View 1 (cartoon, rainbow, N blue to C red):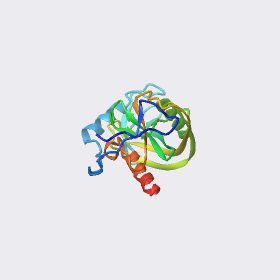
View 2 (view 1 turned 90 degrees about the horizontal axis):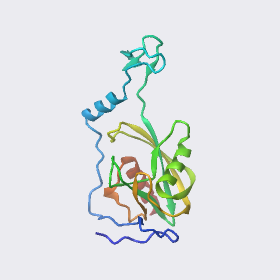
View 3 (view 1 turned 135 degrees about the vertical axis):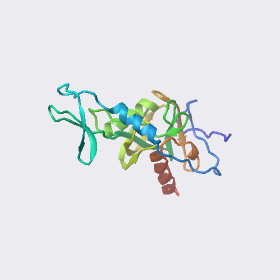
View 4 (view 1 turned 90 degrees about the vertical axis):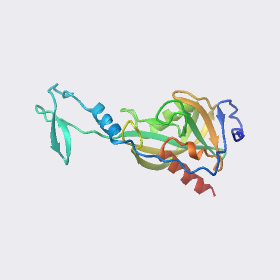
Length: 210
């Protein structure tokens, strides 16, 4: 087991660490869920009655796909991807990652992140999720990238990832997080990253540091 390196100054916490993973291990794979999972996700998302007029919905071929529609008012149910957001935040040359306490990816590392609520922007959600999960404050400095993912049993989604810098607070794992860590370019737990979008962003960040 590699020896953890200390977090940046001012971040003394038993829950915050940085570790160096074995460099000889291959990168993780992120296979999409099988057809059974995809069908299950779609089935769970289906409606029975129209949310506007309570008429039982029917299936019709609309806009190139089989979709549910209300025969009374014409409402169409579009099964859209979820929108998630996160922050690649740095402090003293290290990036902040959190270890997940729940599935998907339980026990693995990812950016502080989560889903966007209906009444907030992706940027607002990114700041909220970061502070809720880490106990740290963050200043968003720009948009890093937008990723599509489907290797998630909850269904496909869009990840809006921002860049930021930690401005205060003490690392405290909260919400569905069990650990907060600070990792330099050569300390990244590359084989223990929960999500493909996070892995790709981390590899791009690592390459930019050299």
